[in-house]
Length: 575
Image (cartoon, helix red, strand yellow):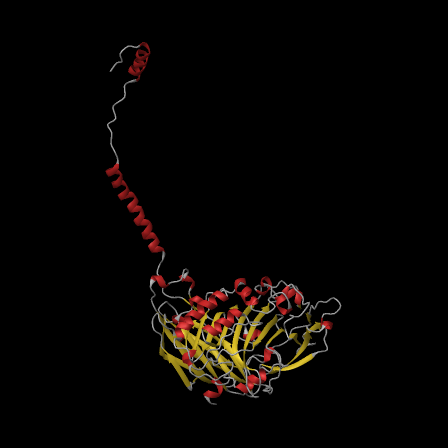
């Protein structure tokens, strides 16, 4: 197995993109919306929204300027033009995707915020464009992306290849950064919805109510922008904007007394119409396990089969552009009733990570990768980005599989520079069949300056998720022929081989404690100093500035009464 077959898999060739993005002749812009509902064996439910906008223009041509915007948001179009962006991928995630319980998601994302961008090869100052771009995106999405700087930015050499047109291999024009502590809330969802052509007024976007979406076990919203071809010969190019939103509703946190879901219970809304600007508006419900696991109503005669993540799935399709889909009530409210508990097939690839050790001086990072395939071995590409204040001892790096050493066939390591850049480690590891592979490396905690600590230093410092990329063997033959009618959820990463499919897995972020000074001591010193100054200097200053006067002794009471009588009678007073 060659390294190029893995790291070059997602470097999409123009013909594949052309097949994926065929468009109707004569159309300038195109918008599609799609909702996929997948019942989970645990009783939870997974809903995935995908909105796709195709824009007929080409920023890659030198001197190309665009001033007319129809469906494509102008704010993002100006960003692409000003900063010479070839591809942009950004996601905001609240919660952690539980692979062993829910399977693989359609488009994975790590907890917090993730941003990776490919710049055009004509950019001379990539770091300058990257800094300005993060500040602009921070304003567009109301997020803390302005905290992305060179201390948490890396340049992966193999893990993140372009997903769109072109086959860029010079990673100098790639920037990748994560903010694992980023909190996702309504102020991030609102600008995301405003990028849609119909906003949240019509179509599938009416279901996106923040009070329901954020009351869930997992929530992730993302924006993916890439150049694509409009035909098989790639005679003209277009920009694809794909907005995705994934949410998992938990059976218990949602307050459900029984395993029964509906659109109204999930989103407090029902569907009444499609977006008028959409050429396609559909709802897919995964019924592969029906009727053994659940019942679906109302029924639909439209069925669709697709090979997704190495498995052939069957979907009930509800086309919102048809009036008969809504029935007499002019409203679509899907209802799912569970019949029993089923057994979910374990995902073929799974990864997790944790910190070991004791004390606040040294520690060890453990990354565990599971290959659950019974008889097939396959390689994975592991990428780790570790902050500079965790000083890695790279000579302690060990990789073991089935209690034996597993030597990586490819290693790329870039050491960190204090307060300038993080560690970057990439390895190509062969996973034996039905095995557990463990990667360990020791580190030492650095001492920070007192101004570099967060406002709550005892909470700990977050380390971003590890990224595992692999071509996983498929149980069924993958479909390499893309057509216009193919669902959006199965066409994000084009498939080059029928025998495998591309998967990206993120591990948990780490929470590491660093040596933390007692920040109450400066407070105590300040209080003691102020007290000494107030008492000592205050008393001394009072003595220097006070005016003293001699107070004459007062007369006895008898003399004062006698003087009062003498004053009334006009007689001289007694002394």
